[in-house]
Image (cartoon, rainbow, N blue to C red; front, side, top):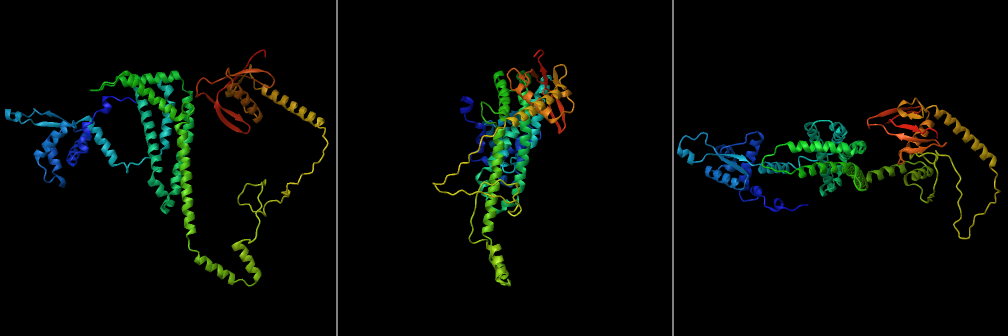
Length: 495
């Protein structure tokens, strides 16, 4: 943070928001701003006075008061005035100084801020997965931008930053609203149950979009070279530097720091920095936590509603059912269904079930025997002496079987090696075990610093990456297909 004279000085242009006659000054400047949006930049005091007199609040307003208010706003630099000499016919008219007034640049931005604050509750934030989709597409264009002219790169840079700024602000505002005290109180009301499911579906749709697009953006960012980034950012700098700015001097260092700082923030938002968690991961965890909190509140509301229900009619119906029992045995059966077993024992243990279904009853599953050990200190399990079994023959048979299987697999895999090269983009349909072997070799080579690896039979190979991230291929397998980069495994000769 740099503290300079711009930061410490008083902003005179904002005085009109807090003085005694604020209601008059704000009305005048709001009218100027509305005309400014219609591209009418200069106005006479008569136009302003006629507009104000249309409203009940300015019924007693006079032209002298209007002239005085305009002079005050000029002194505070909210308005700029210029003498209009185009229609002067006499010296007397020149002395009267007919002025035209224009809204200053500061006042334009202040009025925009006040309008935004007035509509703060109306313009609520939202979570839009489409922003992530657009950011992904814009980042994917970055290598292409290295060959475009400065104007095209500047337009691309502006679009990318606008989407990223909107995503960042929207998610922060939306999460802030969800963690506010008002939201906490609203989640505890029964009315919240009406749109609870819709709210959760909205968050889950955003999470799906975030998971899909953020992973794709991480991959794209990791594949873009530093040289490409510098080329594109330098073109952006050249475009920003070429924009003419009136009454404003911005150094080249400030422009460059702004551009590189924005790119750094975008990278760290998706990739993280210095071992810290990325903002995308934080957002994913926060939205999941909000869903859990909403579900918890909804469950508490439902439980409180059920506990407060009137059971009087239910008890009456139950009494009628007991009175209608013809025998005592029927009453016992009804009692067992209504109140359950009065004297019961709960047996708890680690049971391996044959089904994970929660709807399966105890009588639908096969019986089993559970040995219960006595819980006394003197109890000791009897040791059973078993001779050591000689499994040498079984081991040899298994070893020969494995060796034979490996040799058969090696012969089949050797058929896919053409001139000491395995090109994944040219492979025919292969078996699953062939795919597993090739991917194991590929993973071993990719994890090696020199991209080299060694097969099970001692052959040395090197993995060659595709020339560009877009160079992909489809690998056909007996059990399905999947898309992957076009890697090449090249074996060293004479090994």
